[in-house]
Image (tube, rainbow, N blue to C red; front, side):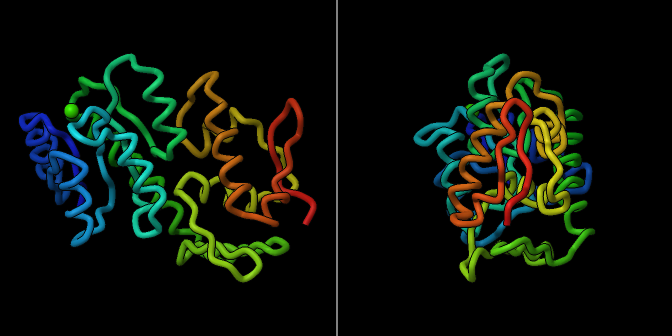
Length: 224
Ligand code: CA
């Protein structure tokens, strides 16, 4: 199921109707409060999340999702006001998987939803246990363990970590990571990568040191 969080009722109904018409189960929520009460019953495949909402805005909702182990891995597409670069960057920093600028066409929305779901499903086709020093990642259960402790990562942090684990010793530029992890070119906004690397390192504790900064180039996994 896909949940559309949007307070403008006619837009919300149109999103839900469109997703249903192409075969998805979909449901609308008018606020963060409604979303979190829906999540108690149902964990969706994806959330389409508007930024401008009453009471609690979309970025704050996104941060809450990402800090809760039950919801941290749900793919989220943020709907931003047209041209608000700041929202876009903040959304990606806070762990959104993609964004779509309003007003958007329903066909564009469906193709973004499908693309994000496809990326998430591709991950599942390569299930195995990856280990490096104190670090182990089970790609079937999406669990990350450092020195025996379970670590909760957001989807993007998790994808970054997997990218390094599949390619130990290989240096990745920030641009390459943006393209491969976020799925599209987002020129000049490589700060998003640095922010995610920083939180990833913090969460990994002792294993955070394995992610090495190569000054002026990017990052690599080394030094276990
Ligand atoms: Ca709105």
